[in-house]
Length: 130
Image 1 (cartoon, one colour):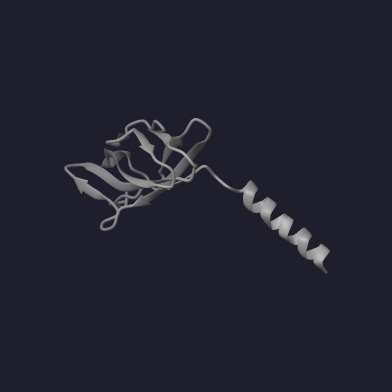
Image 2: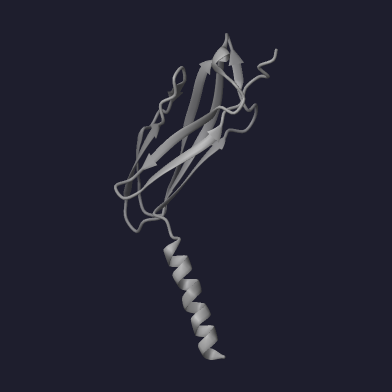
């Protein structure tokens, strides 16, 4: 019985250690309206939440994946976080209303010296049939 419990414990530990990541990054839609439309410009607003899970400080590089006709405003493209701290960075994605179509997705890369993550979120906008 103890041998079985030992094997199960080692397996659980190996899985947990193997699935550990250096950081967490999530792109969350801001509260309120999912998008705004002002003078023909459609804007989706997000908050990028980054958590440093490393034992020391880490520098994060934030870069949107280029999309034709889409402008991305990220006030902070490089972020240094101490160990076990987190930060939120606003992200605004703007485009002409005519460029929007259902299924359009925005991608953002968050990179450290050892790891790169690509975050993807759907862009929302008015019904294009109108």
